Image (cartoon, rainbow, N blue to C red; front, side, top):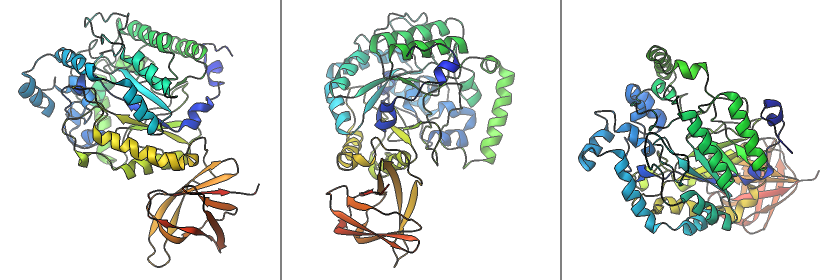
Length: 488
């Protein structure tokens, strides 16, 4: 099918089935920022805006925003940069990053991603610092030789495709600090920092170059997009025509009047006043990042949060394993989310029709993925190798959740459901034990079996509750799954 650059044509396009079925992808934030590998420690990104709004953008836990943070005097990043690097220019990190590349083994990365159970990989090809991980032929007029000498994108594409995975590319379309070097402190600064001038043509040319050279299955833009809507829709149409099974995310807010207004101080002050007041009055509401709805996208991308229920539109939750996407040299095991919590969030999202794009942040000095991150990938892989049928290719059931209740102690383990054809999958987000489990207020009939070993599970209705009787008692493994083949 041939697509035209208009909303009628683009919005009539169905979501490619592979993406809905895949459920699990790997995000990779890697670049010059992985050399200093430092950020402030106020907690989650939303905490930075709650605790220090006037410097929030320079105080986020995201190490990939280091180039901006060191421009704001008095921030921990600026102090660290002065002490550790004597205030050398950010561009000085290019040489040690490329030195570390000599140890890079893209095939080992790809094997780890495949073994994790992931089905696609999205690489950050250019983050907000503007440094490109491919030898782009589109010259940056404001920062010479601002690309890697090696074709990192191409090498990773070959490696992941050899493992049967799909490659996606991330591009920071809304922000490039080589085109706009103004320090960013507040939310309004951030919103108003999208460059004009020669940047829209540059961003468009690079994105088209990425499509032509690598034919990515996912085109993942960040923040916003510097051209008008007409040029953007033509880009989408050309991408779909070149990559028929490609998908685009929802972070393509095109340049318009609002973006132009935010380049001026007075509108920024007004937006900051509104934002600060809202955060102060709604501290528990402001968690993570949920991009606004745009005229065309294939999926939505909540960041460090999830949608609480089934959505009419496909979605993909994205997060790092710690509070940062990029590698943080000071992260310890205690700073990482536990493997169990990450897996529980993943299963919860799948029960509501969502994917998970789980980030790894490799080191810059030796191009290696930290052990804490690899262990979590292995945890996912071990679970999915047994229970993947309860996740891949599934859709939400008529309800997403329930609670298993112990009749003696009245304690409960959260339960999530997925569906595939006539099969309903029951996944316990905990470590249940014993031969009998009761699910409150649930009616379901059919033939049950444990996914781990295929042993029978008898379903017995007890009033409004469903009782599961296990032929082989549960032994405390995390997140066991039961599949029920229903009648009709």
